[in-house]
Image: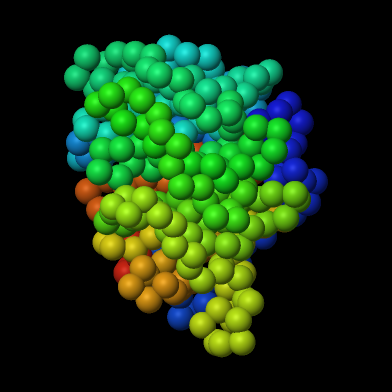
Length: 333
């Protein structure tokens, strides 16, 4: 992610040598570039997002020169973006977003000078932002967030150190409570998705190392479960092809499965992987069809998965793609 003016450890000089795996005929799934549904604002990376009533809201981020405050709504039925009220807090990137009880929330991030802990609520009916109780953890960027049973969670990130703490927000009381930490999972620029009442956190980086540990968090028991690592570390065959550890990947969930795509693993990646929670196994799918990138945003609307934005070296993107995990690959899409 580009939090500072120069490259962070995640965007090393080697990123210009972008890698894109070949699509084996055995890989399933197809990416469709949406036209003319490019993102409505300027190209950017490291944006925050949330989904309310089958509408996706995406804003903030970094365009290569400026940090941003603008917000945009995507209507999947109309295939169009509409500009909404800008975030009233500081322009930022590396923030998190989530939705609870019909409202959207955005907080934390980096404004170019400071790590942030402010937190805001968006009302889609009034199209207004209201500042809520500041995030109770340390100011940070590069965290992941998720919502379970109308409670919001912010975990991991970077505040000068790599983090694994976990904080719960209750919108009914406007209060933060520290929840169970992510075991030995310190990291920043991780990926997260929600299936049912469980959130899954994987990937990320700490100490210039890509993290391979993988966890799920249960919203009922408030506990973490350690899942199989996302690397070829066992003496069994199931993980022989696992090679997708990295950071800055886009993630989303649909049809009962989780998906990660793009990101950096020393060089930029286009690999796409599908997670099945019942078996705790990953399956490689067809590579992301756009330019390899990091810092893209993934979201799901009406059980359809989308990826938008991101950056390749110094080039930010505003293009948008939809993934069909069961379709046959079509090079002409």
